[in-house]
Image (tube, rainbow, N blue to C red; front, side, top):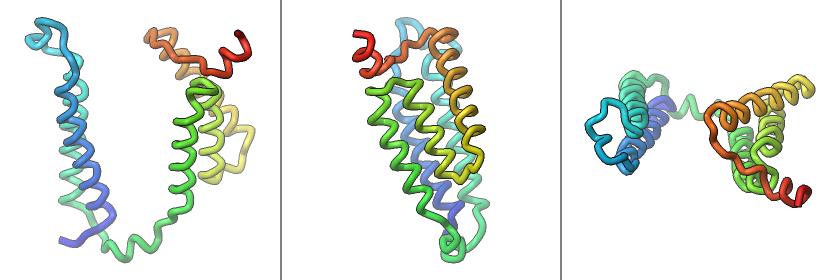
Amino acid sequence: MQISNQRIGGLIFLLFSLFYGYFSYDIALFPGAEYEPFTPRTLPQFLALSGVICSVILVITGGADFRASIKHLVWQPVAKLLAAMFAYGLLVNWLGFVLATIIFLVVSFRIMGETKHKKAAAIAVIFTLVFWALLTQILDIYLEPGQLWHWFNG
């Protein structure tokens, strides 16, 4: 068995899925909920099991030679996207979910080479607002508006 990108990715995903499944047992249950067919643990455990199955399939069927496939990887966009994710994590508390997410998506589109900037900005705004509405209005999840909002509105 040769080491390939697919097998390494499968092993990393396998470890992630196993840890995710292990920590899903830390989710607290309401009294008596352990006898219910669907609990807060059910979906995370199903996702962990699905991840384990997919990653095992990927490890078993992974293909090409590792040295040949690693030569063609482009690491610069990966590093830039990781930096953008890190910056998003720092800025979401200050700018709020909506503004930070729009900025993150626009920057990510540019990193990935999107040339139609108006289209990318429109997609970022629409996606963010729809997702915000889904979370706050339909699922009733509170999203902090950010320190900037509190600073301007007292």
